[in-house]
Image 1: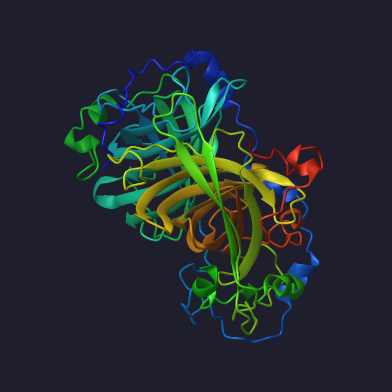
Image 2 (image 1 turned 60 degrees about the vertical axis):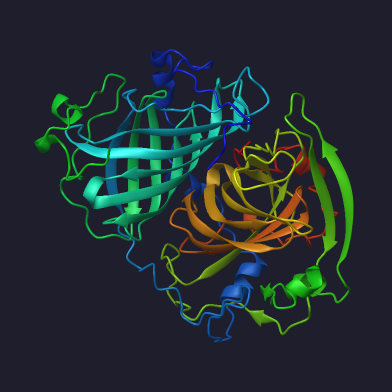
Length: 257
Length: 256
């Protein structure tokens, strides 16, 4: 537990020093540069000498992983060859009623965010069609770099998406306030146990509205309740009133709060 | 100290055995301590870093090549072979120009590292052959335990960014006095769906580190990242072109 006696974390209101008008930013954010999958097929995949000799080795040695005397003779069987990808869409919306974000200006420079500043946060999570309340996001953003030219910041984000009785998904990766990013899906629980893959973060209105596209592998088919046709992201998207009010038909079972 | 702790460790050799041979030596660990004080303006306390320059002693052990049992004969390159391991080498170097590390002395103890201290950090990342700047590392170390006369134990949660290629996220222990293995928790881009582990080897605390990734579940890595790694030593440095991020000495849109 971090003691606050020697340092006084200052929790700013949401008037961030580098907040910008939302409409101009949205124009930029919606024009995300091409996705990775198409881009890196153009990269040359030349096999170096190292690769060739490693892969063509005829030694039929049992796989042994020698790390600090922990031999393991089983080949990795946790990732089946089935590479079926399931897409899951969710909206993360900050309705400013969870004391989030908590901007901890712990670094030495008070004027703008620099490395050392931490931003714990938690927001509400809705289905892609904004008809049902799912749960929350919860985690931490570690400020890595302030980018003056881009008028934004680079964070390392480590957080989870909570889906009520369904379980949760944990992610880790870069959050750039000025650009869309891909984060790694590091794991999950409940129906998401064993999940892997990546998630695309699309920021609609900094820092209040975000749209996520999960590309999930390694889990059973997701329930229909979550696999809805998403609403097109735009600055004016709002959760359905019933979902906002978490009425029983507009929320999943034991939605996280 | 490095000698005894690494006696039980066996070096995983890739088939580039010449690299492994150079790492094997039987000289006892040399370590020289340099007291290095960094003061930040308006810092709460002075922060002193001990620079350990150690040449690790790795006892000679039988070399084993790290192959996997299920060598698929499938020539289709897009098939993911779950048990095929790819080794990736990178150097992480702190050039002291990113404000990193930011030591947040949040615990109650003023002049001693203690549970509660947090250390966000971000350093530069170079390919294993030190010819290309690939990107950065970024994340946080959470101090777990301070061992007097020995060093610190941190829980590290961070990512390695490779420009347009994507990123790899890791989590695990970072000991300032010993090599460790961290878990590869996931990735994006060409590293999407990756699993495995990564060996952290500290060359100069806390400025130079050498990583060996053992990655599974992804397609063959591009040749650009698979150059023959420079033998890790305290004296390694990136090529001048890479350090200056000149075109041709970086990956596409290297992360900065």
